[in-house]
Image: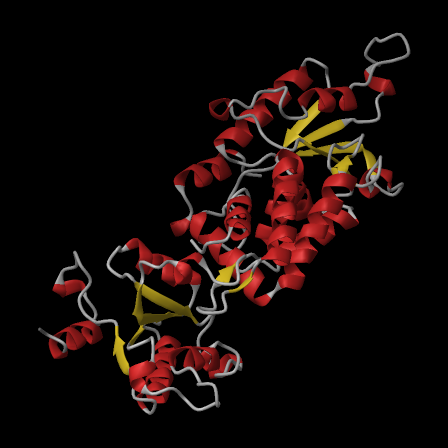
Length: 208
Length: 208
């Protein structure tokens, strides 16, 4: 575009951001170099720092700088409930409701066979070990000795999210753990006339 | 969102990118740290390198690593024509047409009084000095001695772009330089029924 290898390299690098194509990347590069070089250096430092300091929580698998994230370490959370979500953003949405005081497990993805993402690519084994830990001699602990009594599946209500929830619920039922799923139904504030039929059908079946 | 100052800092930093809000920034941060740490470090290095090596071409004001950019230094370009554009992206669009072999001047912005951007904030004085340079004793050179014979205004056809073009044409007419503007008219491939009335009116007035 302009004759600058550094500018070209920056534009190419910015295209690695999700949702950023060639035109957006060029606009970002020009904007930063023309109007916000301080911002450019701030982003560079934040990236370096985050890459070198952020890792996964050993309990819930979310991104954190600590060994155990502050949610898992909070003694006021209900440790008998474990809510399974796809991403930290989903976890944040649930937290904002102020309606849940249990713990979380963050899959950091979802099953997506078409993209080649199977059970080993997301944190499924880590989740099973978290729910049914093994005793000193390697045998699964009994139901009474488990910390987690209920697993709440809060993966997205998309095809992949439903499939992920299904796989988890099948695997955990054989381990005799209570597994629940977020309720499907009519969104708050919506008029039936404009709600899709699948949602209304689910709301009818799950009526209470 | 997640309890990580580094992650929070990265999300805040990414919000400085144009067109990126809180949700996009969080999604970018999670994606980079979860799936593409190499990409994150590549972006960081590209930003640092670009900030420290990219500057403005002394002739055309565009972003470049050299004192004079490759377009201005190209001996095969017609040095009597100077095309004024707002951004390097606009320049690139004109270059892709292969219909122009003159030189460019990149304003790096447009007049926008509502945003507090006046003639001194974009490269207007640098443009005037480029078109009508001063001689050894500080007096403007005569029209015959000038390199630039025609200034083609190719700012955008928006309110601000038109205003910028108007200001430049007024300033340069008093310096007796030929000033032209890109033609307004019906876009190639469009049907009159769906073209806005202002464009059709301009196409009627500018018919040839």
